[in-house]
Length: 496
Image (cartoon, rainbow, N blue to C red; front, side, top):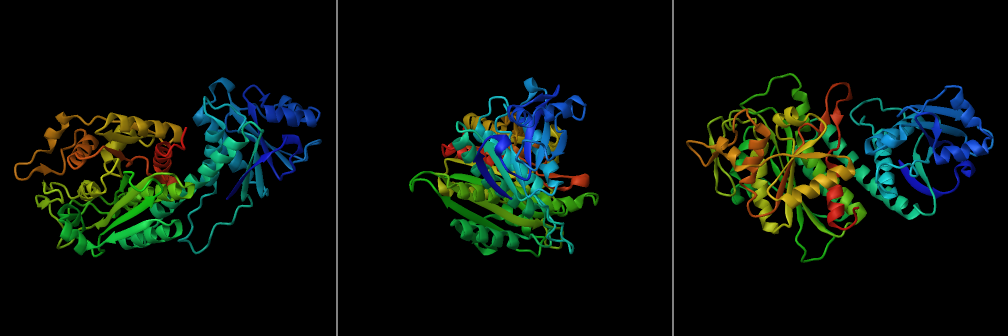
C-alpha cells in the first residue's frame, strides 16, 4: 500500500475515488458540502431520497457526479457528530477503505482529516488512517497454493488544507512505519509452528537487523548453559528444536544514553509439555510467540522512523514439548539469577523463559524494561479480548504505557501487583513455585516475574487475550506493536 498527502479542494481533485463524511441526520461534512455545492445539490438530493442516513460505518458510492473531478464519490457514515471519538473515527476510516477496495479504484482520496475525533490532532488522525489501510490491505496467503486475487486499491491519499499539511504528512509517515511493524508481527504469528521455529525467528531477526542496520546476536544452548539459564533451558528440554536467545540493538540515541529494553516471549509452539493441554484449539498455540513478534515489529517501526533513543530487544525462544527429557511437574530448576523454582505445572512455561531474559537484561543497565507475553488464560478471563493486562513496579512507567495505549488505541488496563499475592507462590522445596493456583492467575504470574525485575523499572504486558483472534477471523492481531511504538515515540519526543 502506498500513502501520500495532497493539498487541494475536494471538488477539484481528479482521483479514481474520493471519500467524504456524512453525519447522522444526513448532515454533510465540510468536504462533502464542497462537493455538493460543486454538484449543485446532487449529494443532498441523494440523501433526501433516503439512500443514506449517516449511520456510522455505512457507505454509498456515487458515480460521475456532475461538477466533481473524481470518478467516484464515496459517502461514509460518521454517526452522531457529538459522539464521534477515537473508536468511531477508526470505524469510519476502516469502512471507507473497505468500500473502496470493492470497487475498481486503484487510488482512494480520503477527506477525513478535517473530521473532529475528540481532541485528536491531524497527526493522530493521519496515523490511524494509515493503520486502518494497512489492516484492510493485509492478507496472509503465503502458505496457500492459490494466492488471493490482488485488490485494485494500492494507493491511499489524504486530502488536507494548508494548516494541517505538515502534521498530516508527519502522522502518515508514522502510521506507515507502525503499520509495517504490525504486519510483520502478524506474518510471524500466523506462520505455522513447523515453519516458525526458534531458528526461523533468529533468521528473521538477522534479516531485520541487516535491512534496518541493527546490531544482532543470537545465543545458542551452550551460551545459555554458561550463563546459568537453567529456567529457560528447562522449557526447551522436551523439544528437538534448539532454543535461541535473540538480542537486537537499535542505537538511535546518544551513545551513553541508557536503553529501553523490550523482552518478548517466543514460545513457537506450546503443547503444555508434560502438563499437556487439551486438544481443542491447541493449534492456536503457534501464537504463543506473539510477544516476540511484537518486539520485532516495534523495533522495525522504531528504525524506520529513526527515533532518537536506544532500544534493546531480547527474545527468548523455544518450543514447549513433552518427551523423555522434558521437565516434569515437581522438578526444581535454577534460574540465571540463582533463585530456584519448583515447576508445579510445565504449562506455565512463559514465565520460566522470561525470568532468565529479565536477568540477562540487567547487563544493559536499562532505563526501563518491558516484557510482552501471551502469558495466562486468566488474563483473558479478567479482561477479555479488548485490553492487555499491565503490571509494573513503577507507577510513572505504568502511566506512560497506559497513555501510549490510549493514544494508539491499543489499550491496556492497570492490574495490581501487591505483595499480598506473592504468598501464593510459596514452595516447600524451592525459593518459589512457578504457579500460584487458580485465583488471580495473571496477577501471580506477574508477581513471579517481578522477583526478577528488582534492579530496574519494569512493566509486564499480558497479551494472551489481545494477540490473536479465534473463530472465523482466526489470526494474529499484531498487538501490541502500536502501543509499544507509541511509548517509544513518546520517550523519543516524537509523540503527542
